[in-house]
Image (cartoon, rainbow, N blue to C red; front, side):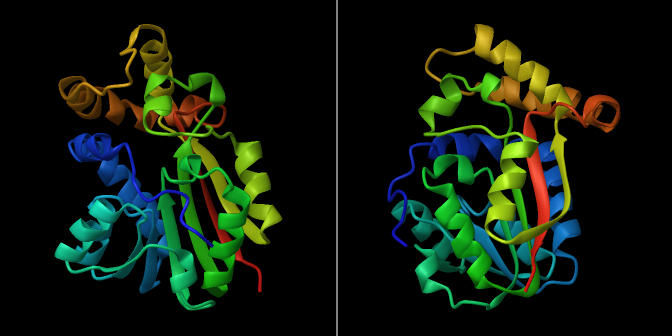
Length: 232
């Protein structure tokens, strides 16, 4: 399977997102909960290594897939085992795979999902987190090369076609859903993220999700996630 891209256009956005402490802590908790006791873990689309570093610090062994050459070098400097393509990973060798905001960048996402399935040991799990709702597609999505945004139905179809059994699926960041509507209407036309606005959202608005996701999270969210496992 060839890399979908060898140069990622959204590196600056990845760097800015490292400022979102509450958001990143929330994602880390989701990944760790899904991973359970798994030790041989693959970060599919590791980017700058934000989550790979945090998981390694918690005692996990993390291998990274990253197609961007410059990002590969960053990960190697941080002493990660890094590959550019899933073909370099042995089949049925992994206990757990996670992928955070990656599949929206992949045009042929069904093929890639099939390849992830093959790399997992029987009964092993995968956790996937993605941007939700095509209605929220904005200048920022276009800037960083998103082919699509997802909903629960789309994500369920994607993973079950590859043979995965779904353990749980849901939306996250309902506050961000409404903020994203505002961004689409009055935000930057060139897709830029304002670091100060991001930090404000992360510190003061994102924590409200504890309540709002409980109330409306079944129906809406800025993101959608799935926890599933290989059947055999």
